[in-house]
Amino acid sequence: MVLIEDDARKDVEEYLRGKLVPGKIAKILTFTTKEDGALCEGCEQVRQLAQELAEIAKGSIISENHFFEDATEMVRKFRVRRVPATVVTDEKGVLAMKFYGLPSGYEFMALLDDVVDAASGSSPKLNQSTLDVLRKVPEPIHLQVFVTPTCPYCPRAVRMAHQFSLANPEKIDAEMIESMEFPELAEKYGVMAVPKVVINDRVEFEGALPEQVFLYKVKEALKNGQSTTDRLDEFSQEN
Image (cartoon, rainbow, N blue to C red; front, top):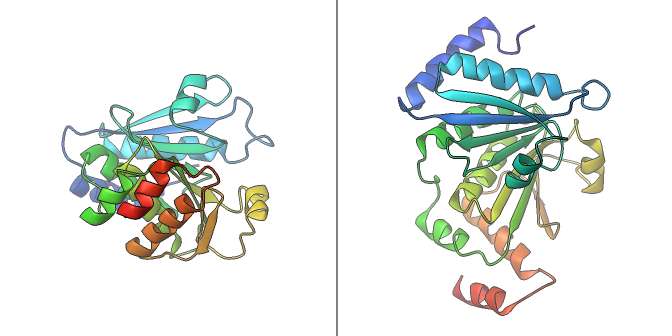
């Protein structure tokens, strides 16, 4: 059974043809377990979705599946914390825009746009002032965006987090988490409405906030860090 039906397949093919630059390649890496089923109910669907997109893109998307248990180096490189996971990256494997759970419903469009960004290598769609701040962050930033497939506002929050990650891939780790597939995480962070964003386990907010407000929340999380250093003080004064 295919995940992308014929009518949708044509739309996806047309969209990617209009957005992807000939000769440029994006990679969709999926991380699953050797034993699906009860241990990872969504693993097969995540793997299949990536494969179908690679088929539709006709060479512009490379799909690779890795077993979480065995791919130690890849798991560490892309900071994969759980399965099923989808990592959208560029051909050199520098970027890492992550999805935990199946990017279905409204989140499917976020996946497509991430693929286009990874293939094109274009600059993040952020204001220059935001880029200047993100490129100087003094400590790692972990952005968790909790979503559901039926939430029309969630892709905006996911895309914003992923754009922040594009600005500084080494320091900023951005993840979509499908709440219904990871109920233990949703419960841990008290997810009652989506999108909900958690930054470094220090700052939380709900809603798809504008860029400048999202950036303010990142700064707040950095300033609220337990291990405040001279670099953090300097960052706060400059920004």
